[in-house]
Image 1 (tube, rainbow, N blue to C red):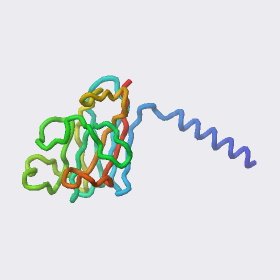
Image 2: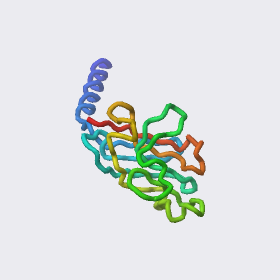
Image 3: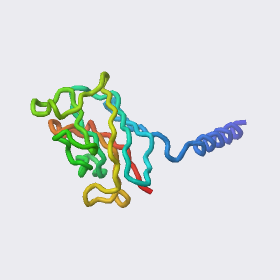
Amino acid sequence: MARRIKLLAIASALVVASASPANAAVTANNPNGSSISIKQKTFSKPTQITVTGRGFDETVGIYLALCVVPKKGQLPTPCGGGVNKDGVGESSYWISSNPPPYGQALAIEYLPGGRFSQQVSITKRIGKFDCRKVKCAITVRADHTRESDRSRDIFIPITFK
């Protein structure tokens, strides 16, 4: 009886795994309770995707961008669009509800509850780095006012076919 239950459990797991689409929506969570989500993680050409975030601490500014995946504990860099301190472009975003005075017109304010939804440009290259050859990811990290704070980092790896 126990063997039969075990076999049924294995068969059920295989059915669930095989029924999952290869390019399903992906969510990455942070121990601080924040998360980011995208609808797909595999791309065949440059495009724009919607990145949604939830549960962020509204007192901590963040950057949202496509970046080369760093070594553990290091700052995500380089990133498409660089660190967006000018508020121009769709490659990276500065999201903060309390930016320094010089950033008042540059940062995008969090939505209530520490949420955001932004269109991010996804490209095969970040400067000299080719995302078909190196690991790239949609990333969130603490902004330049807390640059060494790695506790805010979240990554969703992406790939190009």
